[in-house]
Image (cartoon, rainbow over all chains, first blue to last red; front, top):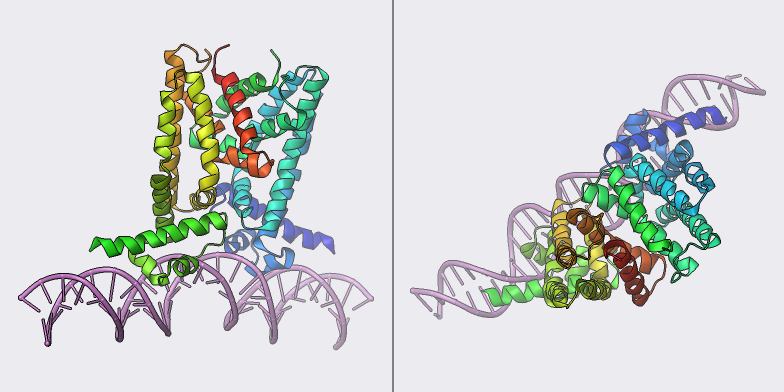
Length: 195
Length: 195
DNA sequence: ATGTCAATTGACACAGTGTCAAGTAAATCA
DNA sequence: TGATTTACTTGACACTGTGTCAATTGACAT
């Protein structure tokens, strides 16, 4: 029962992913996805209620395939908080290009669609978890700069690392990933690590 | 000839502004704007080619009325670069709420619309100008942290100050404007000002 | 053979933008 | 005064993309 269903469903998810990446999230219509997946447009609606539902599902599918959670949480094994911070920036900076188109689409849909907002927030919550871990470790090592409260530090850390910031620096300012990670590490360490 | 035209045009711009602020940029249709302005929907198209054209024009209108350019550039008269930086963050942090809805709409339209992209980029270029001024002044005072190149410092400063960062911290994390300005100043000074 | 299930096909409703043509009402100019 | 121009109105319509619906096909299972 589920093997054939899963095949079509997966074909749709993969097609969505591919198109979202190719077109950087723009101008991807249900018909285009159906065509690439080799199914009828209506077949998509047999598996997903709405376009946004499909986007959320694709985001989750991609996250599972690429394993962001593991990549990010593995980082927390670093010997010191400062090293964990650097590794974290590295993992994130190199991960974003792989999800750019899809993330962008979800971010736009987020403004008008409750389901998209939830899907996006879930993805970003996992990024935040890592920030919480790093700030907590900094506190444990007594290396957090003293003015910060834990929650404010997490908020600022998470925001500084955000998808939008990554986008503005790389796409907007033309930075390489190496530039992004280098300067991001400097800024974050100066902001949060006691001198 | 131009007095009546300007009246209607202005009525449309003001209505657009009001609705965009009220609804935080969401679900504002041409018909809604026309209704509030007290003109027919088609009258709008006599003054503006497309919805995006209207949004750009409104953005410019608002900028003129509120005088962002002056507010931002006045700041550069501060006695030291560090004081200018603080004043700059203050002006910007308090300005954003006044333009939030419109800026948001323009930012979303930016992704699919060339004219919107241009309008947005123009608005943000004016923010960037101020960043350039402050970094230049830091260099003149020999207070810029030594690792930074001028252009990279400007990119990072500008990005850290961006609309999206403001939005994530205030709307997303629930920060007050005071919190935003306080922590933003700390982060920026640590990142860019030599110790 | 019969029922069920996934998928196809084509038609359609709906929302919102933008277009078009005909008409109105007031100001301008002769 | 009457003719023209200008700004605007009115209502109809084309277009795009999403989501719905009903009738149909083909395969597989019992």
